[in-house]
Image (cartoon, rainbow, N blue to C red):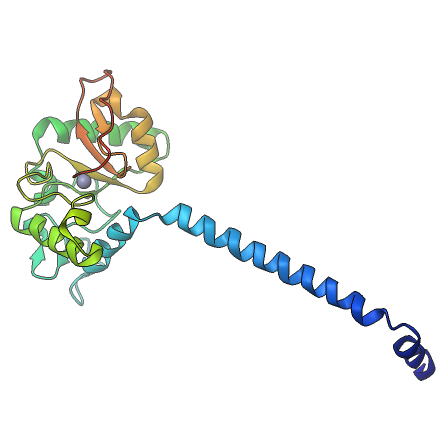
Length: 221
Ligand SMILES: [Zn+2]
């Protein structure tokens, strides 16, 4: 036994060099897997969803307020009365919430119709943002300026209170991602269109039911 091992160690000097390349292959393969995962992660998250997560992180529920089904949304000093909504929690039928109730009536009806049609396809349409107060919209812009480092960069993702269709009740942000893709495909049946190329979740009433959606704008800026 020992002789055999000795023989292998002494008699086959090529064993060590052979292990070298094998180990390198393993390391290379692991590196490739890691790189692929990193690239996939970047491709999946992109820059725009970062701000969605940032806003979501701010929309914390007050302690002890969860679980009873009542609106508990808040974003620092801002709450449901300013149009704050928890992401992927409410539908277009939650009309007791200002974010939903203050939507343009035609937009609200269109989103409700789309919600019913999507449900038939086993897709749940959540309204993650709708009407927002001007103060809340300004707060979102201020947060984005902190995050992106300049107002010019921030405005690619968050409009000013004057420029935002959300403060006019003329826009909804829809989640989750499967619902976004469903609505991109079927929204025009209800007059609903994605309007910004960098926001797959932002929809406005931008055509007649069954019509054609206008060309996408590059961003909210
Ligand atoms: Zn939006």
